[in-house]
Image 1 (spheres, rainbow, N blue to C red):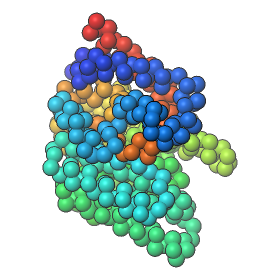
Image 2: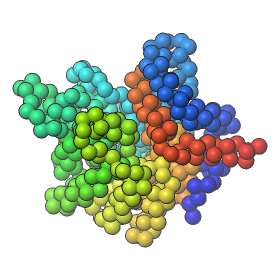
Image 3: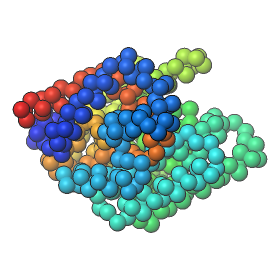
Length: 386
């Protein structure tokens, strides 16, 4: 049986020094006031070569990221592999504005796919659409607004980049996932992923779309996407998460006077997440899933569903995934029990990965009990080691 209380297994990959470093980092993240004060300062600090950029790189960056380039990630990939935990390489650069930036990011994503092609320890790659497309353009397309001729050409280039990434995934036989983002640009992302699934998911799931279940409309969206997959005879690739834009979503909805897409409370998010897991388990012949969750109950529930629906622990239809630096008690205990597990390993230049790091800090301070749970487990293991 899987136990998420086993800290010996959870932290066996960490030295005493690494354990202490993680403990101190989560103590800092758990302080909302300190996190709030540090966020505006961080953007300036990373542009100062020494000592502030070095301090960020050696603390929060090194804990949550694999490095600044693929080569830097090699040690993390190898280290995780020793414990039968796979890697999802994530070039976490976003928010750029020029075509040259978008092309460079696309090339980098292709490089992660080529790296995955020679290593069974990397079953997935991932990308964000805002890494290869201008946010304002995606917003306009999602809203159904009329594009100028220049914008039409720009969007064609976006589609070509997505096509290039998904085609490469099929060529190297490694799945690729598009991350979900803000709700007001999600429609265009859903449409692009559906087209790619129709093309590349005929035999198995190569292309995965992401569903944020802290949105009250995504359970129905998942069911609609499944119906489309059945109708068009392809496999639905699903990455299931709760979400990472809650504060931004609620603020925008309030400012613009529309109903927030976010669930009314955490219990509603949990209910829809687990309902989605049940729906997937019942329809596993047509769905492949990456269970992206730091929630112990949902992770355990999926193991129970797999047993109930005769889905083998090592079925390639089911992966569990957590972010590097978080929820090791879930990742490593599931892996030890024989389930497929992959850690998200973000990487990129420190200054460019800062938005990702800020979201991690926000997530840990806004989700009730998450930081305290990490601290409790780290403390338990430190005490066990004496």
